[in-house]
View 1 (cartoon, helix red, strand yellow):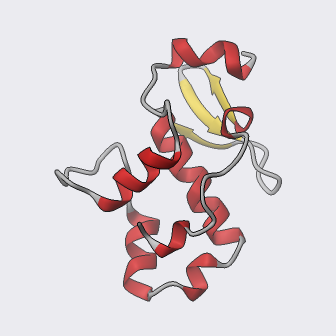
View 2 (cartoon, helix red, strand yellow):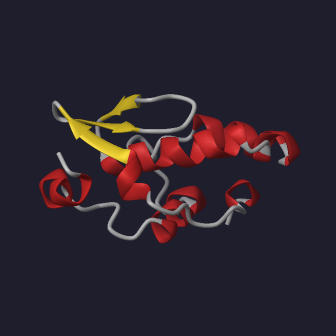
Amino acid sequence: MFEILNTGPLFDIDKRLIFKSGKWLVRTREIPELGPYYSRPEAIEALYRHVAICTGQLRTAEPGLAREFVRHNTAECRKSECTLCSALSAMTPGASQPPSDRLSSIGH
């Protein structure tokens, strides 16, 4: 797993995600509505990226790894066995559920 994700799984991910007008937004302390993203996994990846930036994880990571992490996009990744996609998927159970299945837990 990428060292950038050393913080482990984030808690209360569902409370930070908003599905509005067919797109996903992420709530953070610093940015009220980060996004929009076209899929829930993209929004979750953006949340992890935001946390990595705000906690300084990118400053201590190997530069090439940090660049790859910042540029990565789960929606556009075409690698058959992408380490980052696998790591994010393992840390976010249910990330592939369709929006309609997630709305009740989000409150919208």
